[in-house]
Image 1 (tube, one colour):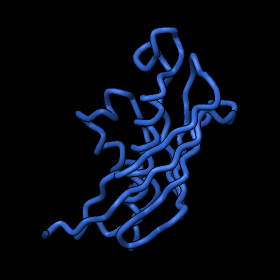
Image 2: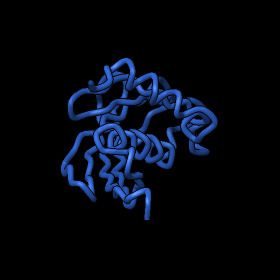
Image 3: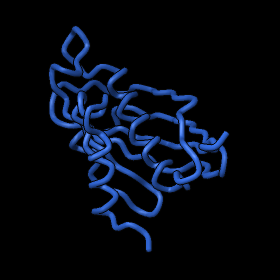
Length: 141
């Protein structure tokens, strides 16, 4: 039997303990058949020196949500997942509130996966458009 959305969210958020995700206060908030959504607060902790969301924090959020999508939609009993390429186009600045990253599959291969990740603000305005490529590698090699 497949895990429920609540079980997926609970497991995802538990996995963030004592990691970069906890440091950035990233929280998984939704998942569906082909997507995962996480949010991150925009505070001074993730600012550039001029007081707006740092692009590196945005990229970390995007890689987090995309990598986790690969984990829950692939066989992680026998494989581990690693991000191998990420790109981010930053469209708009944010100073407060939350940003939300939604990862959806572009390509869902057995070895390589490609995700589109849109980062939006609380008003669903596009902040960054990201692409992530992950690779699944056998655990026993």
